[in-house]
Length: 346
Image (cartoon, rainbow, N blue to C red; front, top):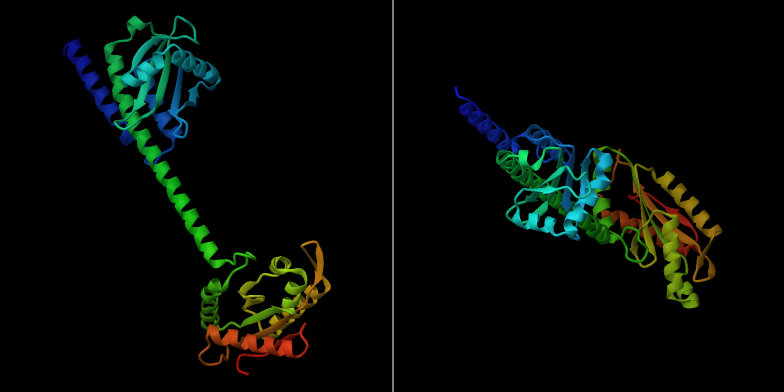
């Protein structure tokens, strides 16, 4: 076999290998992983002293240095690009979208720079800068052709990777927006606690779970005593502050106005009543700072619940809320600042 034929076969094998660059990358992959694989192929083609990757920042269009090998030459790489931009060579190379062999400006003058624009049909992605000790006259047309093939493959993989990253960020942004919208739909705009809509989701779920696993469930309705007097005396803004402070001190769900609900999963009625009593005492002994006023408030509780070992028939959220409201009304009638409780059957 002649030397020319051997050389031709070797060239074809190199072209085939370079054309399979995408197949050697696990997709999706990171920029660093793609860059590492690219460096292996580059160093198999040409002797390289320094290699640097510049990518276009999608927010400002600037070429940013992402990787430099070795890392301690990163500063020189940045200087080299700045000088090439200043003299107009860099923009000429990028616009041609073809590899170019140019003299080094920031590095030793006897070194050559091979500049490889990274681009696809749609956009310019960046550029790869190779500092090589090989004299310009010894870098063959074949070398540049092979580097062109490799660079096109590298550009395609990089474009796909960045596309996936953009889609992932959009997906995360969309998911975040949906979560925020869902949270807003479940929370009270004034106090930040859960609202009646959330209760309509939570209470049926907790009732079903309690019945299925034969666990107790309790519900307390809480109301601020003489709340209208607070608004009339200190103003509605002060009343709003009182509501906010109350929510911060207790994990509540706002049912409406100054009425709040507390759901006690897996809690016996007597225990829920005891918890409500401790909350009542704690609220009564602490004043609230609102609009430069120290306001003392009291609350009344109505508490109900059931034991799933012998549950009443046709338990519904409405029935539980109605019964808690009934006991709350009794607490109000008996002088307020009280906890009145009773089972759902009564």
